[in-house]
Image (tube, rainbow, N blue to C red):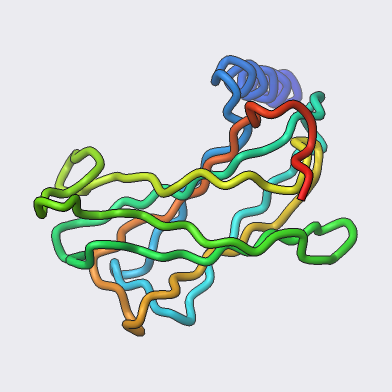
Length: 165
């Protein structure tokens, strides 16, 4: 009985993944006490070996924050490590514009939190690779107040195949 339930859950998960319109991975990690320390690294493990395609991958940073975050921008360093070969395959920087030129918050609001996305970065991996993504903020302040969650989203690249760098 338990095996049937596990199979059903696996099939439903796979079906949900296929029906997401190119979304390969989408996860958030909560920031403790809404204080993101410069020394805190947020990690995501992406196991693309479970997928059947060889598409390229684009990554987008997603942030949920409250009114306590008052910087205009948020800079986040991304390091992507191939866990099979144990080597770093990409290092890049996401830029999130929290406020526009008129002082209005960008993104959408729900339940007291604002959600916004950073720029989209191509990754030098295929959707079948298994990688560890490490995110850390590179702002001048040691502690960022008001950051609730940090997320990463991988989508199939509009460029077919693996990105060339």
